[in-house]
Length: 386
Image (tube, rainbow, N blue to C red; front, side, top):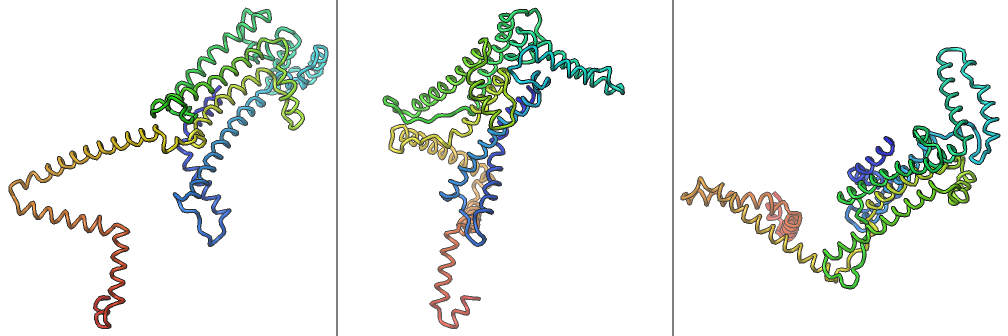
């Protein structure tokens, strides 16, 4: 659980470091693909922005794949009773007992020499014994396959129905926490995914945004409901999920060295993949969102609203600037000569630091001086140059 929490926290820090990582990758990309002497795309150019967008998307997708790999790594690291005994998942009771007797003869604590070896052997032997006792009991094996080693801690359960009820009761708070977590992510903007063309009857920007949020929530919660249905089917059926037995596990065992997944491992990975996928889609939303057509009424309303805000901001800034200027000129009230001197100094400061520092002004001054040097007589040219 702590590892899952750390990976989720990593998604919260990703946006802050994403621009930095994207910049590093883009610089490295240009260093490899652009030949020496050739100009690199300038920041702000269409080519530069296109490369930056693609690298940005690639960074998010890579982190998503890493998060999935990390979840699978911890599942394999924790192992299961079948791997502890070195048996396939479809093994029968007779082979389980035979395998346990062979392992017990090898790893029995009485064969340990040192006290440290004895303690390790005793721990391992208890683990093997627990695996054997669980897998040879049909009811406990059913519960273990679907709920994992947590079922060993459950008390006052004896039948398959009891295990299912307790397992579903433990799963309910998990989904409740998921819903709360998704609501928090939506409030912070991480799950704002989905930009749709304005449908008929939507004429304002606020209406369009409400439709977008509605559609965004619908597909997300639809996937969430499908996940809950798949988990319910996996936990309550007397057989394993056909997707697990006929598609996923055959692919894993045939194409890779990955051991077959048990139902509880499959459910745990599905939880992690679904939630991280939601967060990743929130990060990628701005790249796949088709823009609102410039001529649409919603775009015009948005532009008008922005212009009104800018006008109001300019008026407020002018008022505040006037107050500050009046406060600074307060000591010179009635002193006309001092006011004129202050105005002259301010005018000179503006010319020196604002006008002349402008690139276009400096370029125009340079061209004017160059024309004077070219058209002047020989003696005057030397004077102009000096």
